[in-house]
Length: 296
Image 1 (cartoon, rainbow, N blue to C red):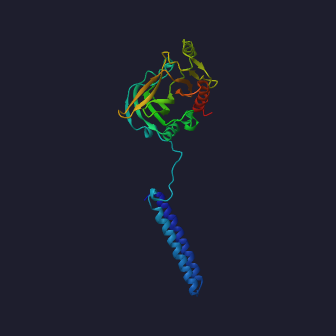
Image 2: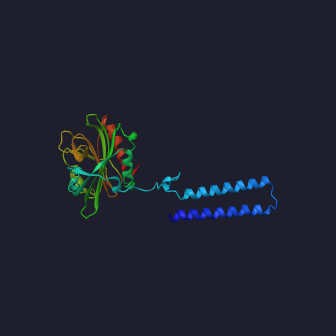
Image 3: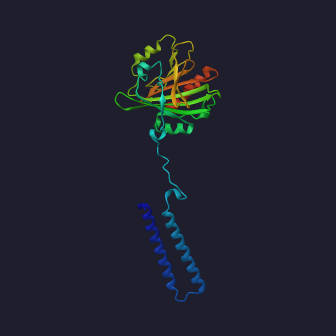
């Protein structure tokens, strides 16, 4: 019996004794109580004792058997509690435009985990990242996503600390398994700001045919946007999963638009393919990306 239960039992016993003593005193004060009053007092005493004994019995029951269960709603799950299944993997994802700046194409001791399914799982993972992620509700996306999943890939940084890359994926997948429309929000913790060296970003912007422009994020960092160029050499890379082989692999396409920025220790790399008027879609996506990062 734990200390909490013992404390409850002591409190119950004390109250029970006090009530019984009070009832006895009142009975003794009546020298010749009538039969009706005596019966009433006896019944009252019996009911009182029964209630107190019932409370004492309840206090001794295991917590999971009580009618009311107390839970800590503020408790945040850990990475290892969420991602428990290590699977095979082929390669990592990164922005081909900024691989020189952030070095995310060179990682060591890489581990891949089976993706978690459903928006609820995405919310749990996002909760472990504090203000770094502000998930977009599926109803606020410009298409109907019938697949909602989150990937995790870990590696070691140069200082020995853990680097974790998450990919929050919203996809419209056909019955044949083809990704028709999608948005992939990839976020990776890094040791330094890859956009701090303006010469690197200026060189990237001057690459012929890159279609790269700054659509603006905040006064500290730009938000780069790259329009799809199907006939050019730059590709967008994202994770997918082979359920049969239990393997995370990379998908590569030249028909996706990309966003890239840095904020508070994280690199944000977002890729999307959405049908419709591309100028309207781009305007919506700029707002969605800003909200995902800053919450505004």
